[in-house]
Image 1 (cartoon, rainbow, N blue to C red):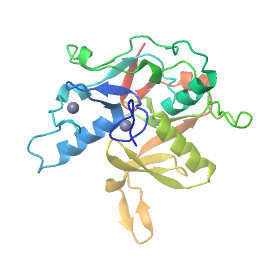
Image 2: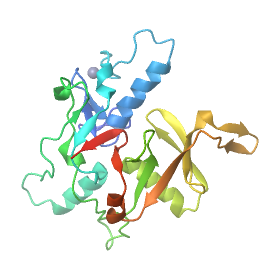
Image 3: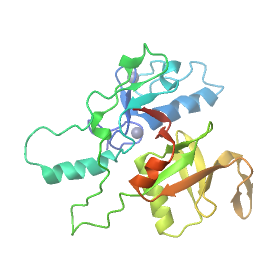
Image 4: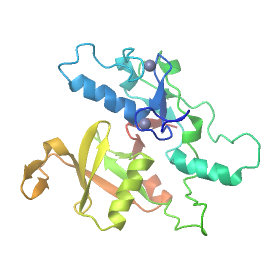
Amino acid sequence: MATEGDCAICYSKILLPLTLDCDHTFCFTCIKGVYLTSMDDEDNEDGPCCPMCREPIDDELFDHPTVKGQLDMRDPEEKEEEKEKEEEGDEEKKDVSNTSIASDAGDKMDDLHADLAALSVSNTVVKQEGKKKKNDSSSYWLYQGGGGGWWRFDPRCEKDLEKGREEGKDSIKMLICGNMYCMNLDKMVQQRLQECDYDDTGYHLTGQNRSIRRVESKEELETLRVRGIAGVAISQ
Ligand SMILES: [Zn+2]
Ligand SMILES: [Zn+2]
């Protein structure tokens, strides 16, 4: 069930929120998925529109979006848990103020509001129940960018990747921006499922894949040219 503050597409807490002209807000990757999917749909004559109110989505929103802030973004669900734990009144602290996702279009800046709470300095995972579960906060998952450098997966994708790795899986499937991807954890590459070869034995990678990598620490992360998170570039 979606509650106030949840994304109407994924029913989870909104990650990297993006507000459309109509004032409806979704996770950046969720609404980008809707956008890309309807761009690919030849039967959709009206073009991409808001899933809530059908108002057309401005193309410029996805032109090189950037966000000022930290690469070190945590999953809002975890943020919630911590908040409950800290729950001692007082306004929730916001680590980055007035962060906004901006497109290259410049004049579009006001249309996009990144949620400050989604971007935060610490990535520490502290589970409430029991004594602090394994602190796996220091691993990051990245994918190779088209123009060089690396992009960080969003924290939910990272969780799935980390889980797949812990379970010793060779590969997992993941939905990213409306496209199904095959993440090969053995060869450490990713490829769109529809571009994979398929036979009785399953999906097979072709030459179309890109590297992914797991980074063990923040220090290691800082040695790499990481351009942003899930397609949202970070400007310092
Ligand atoms: Zn969402
Ligand atoms: Zn709308």
